[in-house]
Length: 183
Image: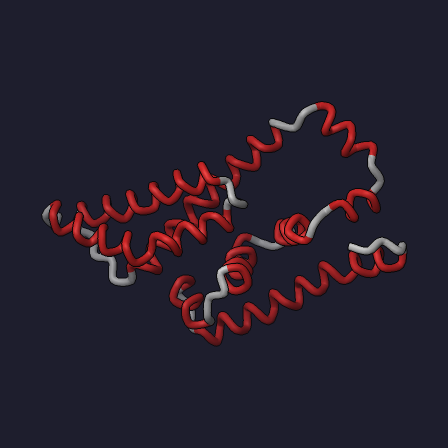
């Protein structure tokens, strides 16, 4: 049963006031600070919520719904953004990158670039957990609400994620500390 437009407007405004900054922050992290994509995705997230309200769908956990919607929308936008970024590499840049040695490339990365290279090696679910836990500093309870799982399951997944990250980063650290390259 559809609700009145004024009721939907009120619910949208309430959600917007409560969750807008959190959703923008989440999208910013997921979309690697691509401001135009973040703005587009944020608008689309709240539009999806508003349309659901107008159709009369009851959404009990608004925050969780917005985060799930954000995750789905950001996945598509992130893929589109990466494809566009790959197309826009200039020939001179490609030649420079190809000509540099691995050690020189690694030492030229800053911490954030290395972190993003590591995160790409994680599954989508692991990336989402990493961003919620370590970048957005969400509690286990908050993450559980967003992912719709109990906090102890979040703790177990976080532990497995830390182990995987250690396994991924271990050989890299060994390689560059042996070669005398300081990151």
